[in-house]
Figure 1 (cartoon, one colour):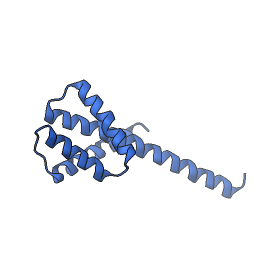
Figure 2 (cartoon, helix red, strand yellow; figure 1 turned 180 degrees about the vertical axis):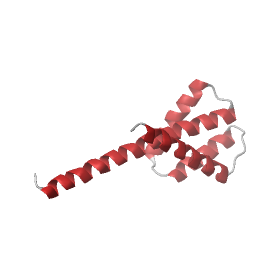
Figure 3 (tube, helix red, strand yellow; figure 1 turned 45 degrees about the horizontal axis):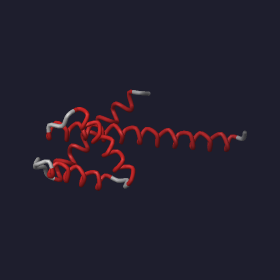
Amino acid sequence: MSGFSQREDGFEKKFAFDAEKRFRAQARRNKLLAAWVGERTSMTAAAVAQYAEELSAHDIKKPGDDDVAEKLLGDLTARGVSATKEEVREQMTRCLARANELTASEG
């Protein structure tokens, strides 16, 4: 393998590794967000786990944070909990930061 091919292979592996880390962090963020909603709406542990799966599926189906924020806000409102867009966004930021910490500690 030439030096260029080795370097190209290294970049591809790094890209794949970084993409996998982002995916794991997003999944963790969604679990943390589900727990947050669960605390605010008195969900059972089973309901929180199911909601986390629903939230992750929603996030995969339509990538991006805007739709997740809208879903969280709508779900909170539907359960009788008042929340603002800003509050939801702040919680999303906190949960992603925590998820990134957990993912980084994996190695």
